[in-house]
Image (cartoon, rainbow over all chains, first blue to last red; front, side, top):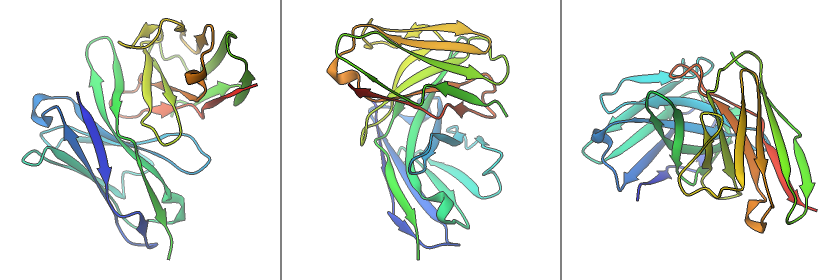
Length: 121
Length: 109
């Protein structure tokens, strides 16, 4: 059973860098698929942040691209998100997810439970 | 950027009811549409992919339809565990962008 678990600081100061990690269990990241991050600000909908492959190849939401960096640590079977120069608008629940795709479908089929990150001084 | 608009934003229904949630894309996305169920504090759950294919393990009372710009999620015979927020998501512009609808909160009447 594939499981994802987010971890990281729940409070980040404005202008600093938000750093989160997603630990994957029950599946090896090196076996394939992309791994993604999605967030949900309080009272708002879901926003895709980006996806990364085991090789380190990544795609980012254009609206966040200048501030986001994703990375993969295959030795620890985990992937990470860094979002720099955060503001209160980055306050959200952050989810990690597996992007499952083939010739006929493209979905986020497995998600973590999410971690709340608040940007405040 | 493709905008995904869900309606209604919220609805109240009773156990046993049939409900329909609509998702409209700002441009044609063929059948590249997924539906998710989200309960507070839980991981979102994939229900439907490719507009109408049921994810393994999802009860058959859930169904999806549509293509192009207009899509629907139907839940037949509502059960207590179905009260949640539902999101549509387009994967037409994969892998460069994914857009979600704003969500539809399904509440018990």
